[in-house]
Image (cartoon, rainbow, N blue to C red; front, side):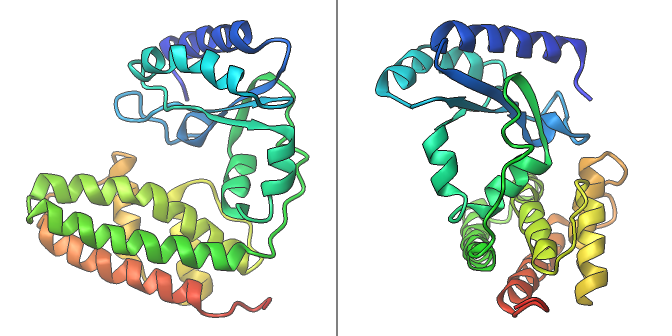
Length: 243
Protein backbone atom coordinates (compact mmCIF):
# COMPACT_ATOMS: atom_id res chain seq x y z
CA UNK A 1 0.00 0.00 0.00
CA UNK A 2 1.51 3.29 -1.09
CA UNK A 3 1.49 6.27 1.25
CA UNK A 4 0.09 9.68 0.34
CA UNK A 5 3.51 11.13 -0.45
CA UNK A 6 4.30 8.35 -2.92
CA UNK A 7 0.87 8.70 -4.56
CA UNK A 8 1.55 12.42 -5.02
CA UNK A 9 4.93 11.62 -6.60
CA UNK A 10 3.25 9.22 -9.03
CA UNK A 11 0.74 11.89 -10.02
CA UNK A 12 3.56 14.36 -10.70
CA UNK A 13 5.48 11.71 -12.63
CA UNK A 14 2.53 10.96 -14.91
CA UNK A 15 1.96 14.66 -15.56
CA UNK A 16 5.61 15.05 -16.54
CA UNK A 17 5.54 12.03 -18.88
CA UNK A 18 2.33 13.25 -20.51
CA UNK A 19 3.87 16.65 -21.07
CA UNK A 20 6.93 15.10 -22.71
CA UNK A 21 5.31 12.41 -24.87
CA UNK A 22 1.76 13.47 -25.74
CA UNK A 23 0.12 12.80 -28.19
CA UNK A 24 2.12 9.58 -28.78
CA UNK A 25 1.68 8.23 -25.25
CA UNK A 26 -0.26 4.95 -24.97
CA UNK A 27 0.11 4.22 -21.25
CA UNK A 28 2.13 4.66 -18.08
CA UNK A 29 2.21 1.56 -15.88
CA UNK A 30 3.48 0.97 -12.35
CA UNK A 31 4.78 -2.58 -11.82
CA UNK A 32 6.71 -4.56 -9.21
CA UNK A 33 6.41 -4.09 -5.46
CA UNK A 34 4.81 -0.65 -5.81
CA UNK A 35 1.83 -2.29 -7.51
CA UNK A 36 1.50 -4.97 -4.81
CA UNK A 37 1.68 -5.51 -1.07
CA UNK A 38 5.46 -5.80 -0.64
CA UNK A 39 6.38 -2.14 -1.18
CA UNK A 40 8.64 -0.62 1.50
CA UNK A 41 8.85 3.21 1.25
CA UNK A 42 12.31 3.14 2.81
CA UNK A 43 13.96 0.64 0.48
CA UNK A 44 11.76 -0.12 -2.54
CA UNK A 45 12.04 1.65 -5.86
CA UNK A 46 9.10 2.64 -8.03
CA UNK A 47 9.24 0.73 -11.32
CA UNK A 48 7.42 2.14 -14.32
CA UNK A 49 6.76 1.13 -17.91
CA UNK A 50 6.02 3.71 -20.58
CA UNK A 51 4.43 2.67 -23.87
CA UNK A 52 4.22 4.91 -26.92
CA UNK A 53 2.60 4.26 -30.28
CA UNK A 54 5.87 4.12 -32.24
CA UNK A 55 9.12 4.72 -30.39
CA UNK A 56 11.55 7.27 -31.79
CA UNK A 57 14.82 8.72 -30.55
CA UNK A 58 13.01 11.98 -29.80
CA UNK A 59 10.93 10.19 -27.14
CA UNK A 60 14.04 8.88 -25.39
CA UNK A 61 15.72 12.27 -25.66
CA UNK A 62 12.75 13.96 -24.03
CA UNK A 63 12.61 11.43 -21.16
CA UNK A 64 16.38 11.51 -20.57
CA UNK A 65 16.16 15.10 -19.40
CA UNK A 66 14.07 13.98 -16.40
CA UNK A 67 15.48 10.57 -15.46
CA UNK A 68 18.14 11.79 -13.04
CA UNK A 69 15.64 13.96 -11.17
CA UNK A 70 13.20 11.10 -10.77
CA UNK A 71 15.88 8.63 -9.76
CA UNK A 72 16.61 10.91 -6.81
CA UNK A 73 13.00 10.26 -5.76
CA UNK A 74 13.42 6.46 -5.89
CA UNK A 75 12.04 5.97 -9.40
CA UNK A 76 13.95 3.37 -11.39
CA UNK A 77 14.85 4.24 -14.96
CA UNK A 78 11.62 3.44 -16.85
CA UNK A 79 11.19 0.69 -19.38
CA UNK A 80 10.11 2.26 -22.68
CA UNK A 81 8.24 0.15 -25.25
CA UNK A 82 6.18 0.72 -28.32
CA UNK A 83 3.29 -1.39 -29.60
CA UNK A 84 5.45 -3.30 -32.08
CA UNK A 85 7.97 -4.29 -29.40
CA UNK A 86 5.21 -5.69 -27.21
CA UNK A 87 3.72 -7.67 -30.09
CA UNK A 88 7.04 -9.21 -31.14
CA UNK A 89 8.82 -9.76 -27.81
CA UNK A 90 6.24 -11.92 -26.03
CA UNK A 91 7.89 -15.17 -27.13
CA UNK A 92 11.42 -14.32 -25.92
CA UNK A 93 10.49 -12.62 -22.63
CA UNK A 94 7.65 -14.76 -21.25
CA UNK A 95 8.84 -14.42 -17.64
CA UNK A 96 8.93 -10.64 -17.74
CA UNK A 97 5.57 -10.28 -19.47
CA UNK A 98 3.94 -12.69 -17.00
CA UNK A 99 5.31 -10.64 -14.10
CA UNK A 100 4.14 -7.39 -15.68
CA UNK A 101 0.66 -8.76 -16.34
CA UNK A 102 0.28 -10.29 -12.87
CA UNK A 103 1.33 -7.24 -10.87
CA UNK A 104 0.72 -3.86 -12.45
CA UNK A 105 -1.31 -0.72 -12.02
CA UNK A 106 -2.21 1.58 -14.89
CA UNK A 107 -1.37 5.18 -14.03
CA UNK A 108 -2.46 6.63 -17.36
CA UNK A 109 -3.86 5.38 -20.66
CA UNK A 110 -4.71 1.85 -21.79
CA UNK A 111 -4.55 -1.32 -19.68
CA UNK A 112 -3.05 -3.32 -22.55
CA UNK A 113 -1.44 -5.81 -20.14
CA UNK A 114 -4.80 -7.06 -18.87
CA UNK A 115 -5.64 -8.58 -22.25
CA UNK A 116 -2.13 -9.43 -23.43
CA UNK A 117 -1.92 -13.00 -24.79
CA UNK A 118 1.41 -14.57 -23.82
CA UNK A 119 3.53 -17.10 -25.69
CA UNK A 120 5.07 -19.66 -23.31
CA UNK A 121 6.95 -21.82 -25.81
CA UNK A 122 10.29 -20.56 -24.47
CA UNK A 123 9.33 -20.24 -20.81
CA UNK A 124 11.38 -23.18 -19.49
CA UNK A 125 14.47 -22.26 -21.53
CA UNK A 126 14.35 -18.66 -20.36
CA UNK A 127 13.74 -19.77 -16.78
CA UNK A 128 16.79 -22.05 -16.81
CA UNK A 129 18.96 -19.37 -18.44
CA UNK A 130 17.98 -16.80 -15.82
CA UNK A 131 18.39 -19.21 -12.90
CA UNK A 132 21.85 -20.38 -13.97
CA UNK A 133 23.08 -16.88 -14.76
CA UNK A 134 21.87 -15.52 -11.42
CA UNK A 135 23.47 -18.42 -9.54
CA UNK A 136 26.83 -17.59 -11.14
CA UNK A 137 26.39 -13.93 -10.25
CA UNK A 138 25.47 -14.83 -6.67
CA UNK A 139 28.73 -16.76 -6.32
CA UNK A 140 30.69 -13.83 -7.76
CA UNK A 141 29.06 -11.42 -5.34
CA UNK A 142 29.97 -13.71 -2.44
CA UNK A 143 33.64 -13.57 -3.49
CA UNK A 144 33.43 -9.78 -3.71
CA UNK A 145 31.89 -9.53 -0.23
CA UNK A 146 34.91 -11.19 1.45
CA UNK A 147 32.50 -12.69 3.99
CA UNK A 148 31.30 -9.35 5.41
CA UNK A 149 28.05 -10.07 7.24
CA UNK A 150 26.23 -6.87 6.32
CA UNK A 151 26.99 -7.32 2.63
CA UNK A 152 25.96 -10.98 2.65
CA UNK A 153 22.63 -10.21 4.29
CA UNK A 154 21.94 -7.38 1.85
CA UNK A 155 22.93 -9.63 -1.05
CA UNK A 156 20.54 -12.39 -0.02
CA UNK A 157 17.62 -10.01 0.40
CA UNK A 158 18.38 -8.24 -2.86
CA UNK A 159 18.78 -11.47 -4.84
CA UNK A 160 15.44 -12.80 -3.61
CA UNK A 161 13.79 -10.25 -5.91
CA UNK A 162 15.20 -12.27 -8.81
CA UNK A 163 14.70 -15.75 -7.39
CA UNK A 164 11.10 -14.90 -6.44
CA UNK A 165 10.43 -14.41 -10.15
CA UNK A 166 12.11 -17.72 -11.00
CA UNK A 167 10.09 -19.52 -8.31
CA UNK A 168 6.90 -18.11 -9.82
CA UNK A 169 7.98 -19.14 -13.32
CA UNK A 170 8.72 -22.66 -12.10
CA UNK A 171 5.15 -22.90 -10.78
CA UNK A 172 3.85 -21.76 -14.15
CA UNK A 173 5.80 -24.59 -15.77
CA UNK A 174 3.68 -26.97 -13.68
CA UNK A 175 0.49 -25.22 -14.76
CA UNK A 176 0.01 -23.58 -11.36
CA UNK A 177 -1.01 -19.94 -10.96
CA UNK A 178 1.71 -18.53 -8.67
CA UNK A 179 0.81 -16.42 -5.63
CA UNK A 180 2.10 -12.85 -5.64
CA UNK A 181 3.47 -13.03 -2.08
CA UNK A 182 7.00 -14.46 -2.10
CA UNK A 183 6.73 -16.74 0.92
CA UNK A 184 3.54 -18.35 -0.36
CA UNK A 185 5.05 -18.88 -3.81
CA UNK A 186 8.09 -20.61 -2.30
CA UNK A 187 5.84 -22.78 -0.09
CA UNK A 188 3.73 -23.78 -3.11
CA UNK A 189 6.82 -24.78 -5.06
CA UNK A 190 8.07 -26.85 -2.11
CA UNK A 191 4.72 -28.63 -1.97
CA UNK A 192 4.34 -29.29 -5.68
CA UNK A 193 7.95 -30.28 -6.40
CA UNK A 194 8.81 -31.98 -3.09
CA UNK A 195 11.62 -29.47 -2.46
CA UNK A 196 12.76 -27.59 0.64
CA UNK A 197 13.72 -23.90 0.66
CA UNK A 198 13.69 -22.76 4.31
CA UNK A 199 16.21 -19.94 3.80
CA UNK A 200 14.14 -18.49 0.96
CA UNK A 201 11.03 -18.61 3.11
CA UNK A 202 12.91 -16.92 5.92
CA UNK A 203 14.24 -14.20 3.63
CA UNK A 204 10.67 -13.52 2.52
CA UNK A 205 9.61 -13.24 6.16
CA UNK A 206 12.53 -10.93 6.98
CA UNK A 207 11.53 -8.68 4.10
CA UNK A 208 8.01 -8.53 5.56
CA UNK A 209 9.41 -7.69 9.00
CA UNK A 210 8.12 -10.93 10.52
CA UNK A 211 11.53 -12.51 11.32
CA UNK A 212 15.12 -11.43 11.98
CA UNK A 213 18.66 -12.73 11.57
CA UNK A 214 19.23 -13.12 15.32
CA UNK A 215 19.88 -16.86 15.60
CA UNK A 216 22.06 -17.47 12.52
CA UNK A 217 25.31 -16.09 11.14
CA UNK A 218 25.28 -14.49 7.70
CA UNK A 219 27.94 -16.87 6.36
CA UNK A 220 26.02 -19.97 7.49
CA UNK A 221 22.80 -18.64 6.03
CA UNK A 222 24.49 -17.79 2.74
CA UNK A 223 25.99 -21.27 2.42
CA UNK A 224 22.53 -22.80 2.86
CA UNK A 225 21.06 -20.23 0.48
CA UNK A 226 23.54 -21.16 -2.25
CA UNK A 227 22.54 -24.80 -1.87
CA UNK A 228 18.86 -23.87 -2.18
CA UNK A 229 19.47 -21.77 -5.28
CA UNK A 230 21.41 -24.64 -6.86
CA UNK A 231 18.45 -26.87 -6.01
CA UNK A 232 16.09 -24.41 -7.66
CA UNK A 233 18.24 -24.51 -10.81
CA UNK A 234 17.94 -28.29 -10.76
CA UNK A 235 14.15 -28.09 -10.57
CA UNK A 236 14.03 -25.74 -13.53
CA UNK A 237 16.32 -28.03 -15.53
CA UNK A 238 14.07 -31.06 -15.08
CA UNK A 239 11.18 -31.55 -17.53
CA UNK A 240 7.79 -30.68 -16.07
CA UNK A 241 4.62 -32.73 -16.15
CA UNK A 242 3.39 -30.78 -19.15
CA UNK A 243 6.57 -31.29 -21.26
